[in-house]
Length: 406
Ligand code: TMP
Ligand code: ZN
Image 1 (cartoon, rainbow, N blue to C red):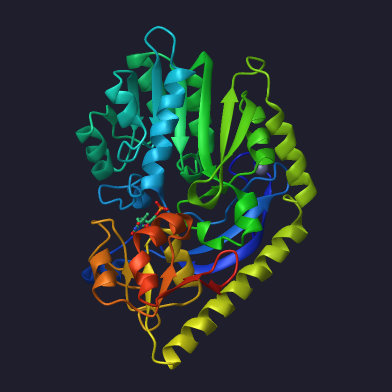
Image 2: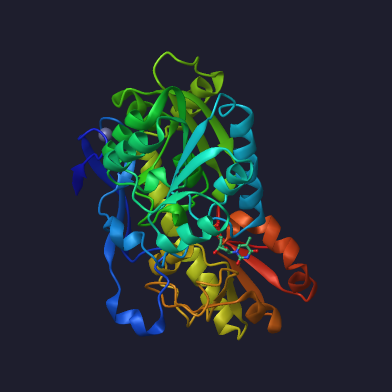
């Protein structure tokens, strides 16, 4: 099957199919099981601009609403990273008279709260009303809208142009990327920068991190595809930086053409992508086989543990766990519950697989033999916090980059 590329209109050829899936952050109450939304989770690459993207999508209003369960402040590493981001902007881009920063999808204000505390002019654009309220409670100015051309035009009329437009784990979520980029063009000041940090296809393929593939991630960026997208919309990719969040992301900096000299990192990463064959069909074929192997190994291990009468509990219920449990058909029979520190997920079920989410106390109260670490990108923070589990003889199961026990 193919579709037309959302960026350039070229043919998008499918390379992996993760089957019938639901919404990754669609944690539901037991009484709402009947009303689940399903779609086919398949990914392909555009033959022209190399943008990797979903073939089918869940409508935006079903993904972001007043009961959105992803809280960006949910881990220490995120809180630190985004506070540092804010300080960096204030020391570099926001030093002129009355600077202005706009964040696309500010979530619970994890980044903008630092900017707000410093008294710098800012605006968060956040369609999910519940997380927008959390940001407002931290003193952040929020507009509860989707960011698109119309919203950007409105913001410019009211506040003027922005020195920085920022997005973290949001730009790859927006299917109408054309409207978003036209909006950036309207809103960005002549010397401004558009900075975004998103999951990296190189990490997903390199580590077989197929759990990063879910309904909210419409696009899977590479330096090459982002550069092509920037060119197409009259912007220039001037810097790239690897960052450790969500297992390995890239921070892209776009500016108006010829305003800034691209850093050597852009050329270096482009060359590395070419060497790795990150736009070659064979690379994705191999990825598809690797994904199947991980599924086979994980299910076999969980069945063996069950057959031996030992217990497994899931640890961390990020959106990623929805893809893994549904693709591998792991239900409460293999993993009776998953513990997670996010209050709004607790008491709910993982969508599709219907594994209950419980508070971390449920884990500590009666340690299982194994903990299946779905929040593997926070392994260090979690394993340090849960040292007593290992001291009591517990073991961690990880499935990235392959299934292993530690
Ligand atoms: P994230 O990587 O997308 O932020 O998701 C991490 C999930 O793991 C989130 O639902 C919070 C949860 N979590 C815990 O339950 N305990 C922890 O110690 C950490 C760091 C995260
Ligand atoms: Zn394309």
